[in-house]
Length: 98
Image (cartoon, rainbow, N blue to C red; front, side, top):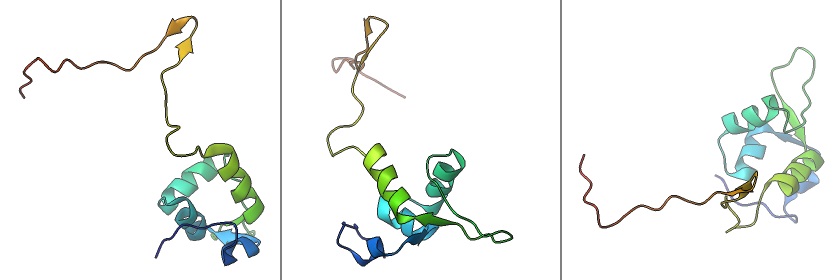
């Protein structure tokens, strides 16, 4: 059962989180957390000889604060090398068939 976590939840009192707990916090599948780990975006701890991966709650919080944007602040067109990038406009007066 996944639910949104806030700073007062019990999970923040835990020092180490499992990959599943991190995934539930961000509302992603565990494979996404693994990809973040392999890209070096999330620090983790793994006991020698073990397959279990654990994440420090402080590192998870830092990752969240650094990478998540508030709602409504998604990708926006930007200017690169003096050229203003804009979203493409689709003409609605044209009949499209497949």
